[in-house]
Image (cartoon, rainbow, N blue to C red):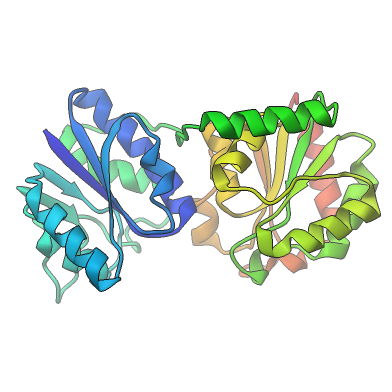
Length: 319
């Protein structure tokens, strides 16, 4: 049986697609699982031994022709796109696919899928992985159990992190992530500095960021006397998080990386109710620190509020 899963979106969304692999393999252990991915997220499943092949949807004309040729050469038994709202790209790729059964979202104007899934409005209150499970239920015929995300680390990434830990004589440590996908989801530098200086007596902090924010976290490191991890690919960042005792981060893909290794998470999150539910951490020990007002941005969270929640998390969880 050949089954195709589709995820063209963000890196975090792709990480949250990986439980689908486990759901399918539980029912169909011999199934060949393919992914259709985008140029920026395909690497998340590239190392997964349960994925036979990843097809990259790239709008570059030559690469697009190659993609279409490959797509149409594989006769999938099932094609599953869990996106629960209309997307022209999803519709186009589904039409190009020669799958026997196509599962995805149809609206009133577009009927690209044989089996139509519920809309985002119908899915309010459900986590991303629960929405994915509903899609996979169409082929498993019963609801599979919910799995955490799964990330397969590269040997070199593990070695890089082990060397960093050894060279800095670290035993246990907490990772702080400064970066997020946009400024609305980020906490200000001065708040991080204040938070770190008031809590570092409890922690060996290692701060990380995307390459574009590296100068900022270097400054934070100097003003707080904590370790600063060099800019790295996501697999190396994942290896670092996998060895941490705790992750403190804005709501971004790092939350889901921690979930893959069941690392405790404190997530600073914008108070957008549907998003809070859809992307909440799946680690067994987690807390979300939200602004008090609905739809408020992350900068509405004060340092004192964050420290209060941080202390509560420590009192109620053995870390």
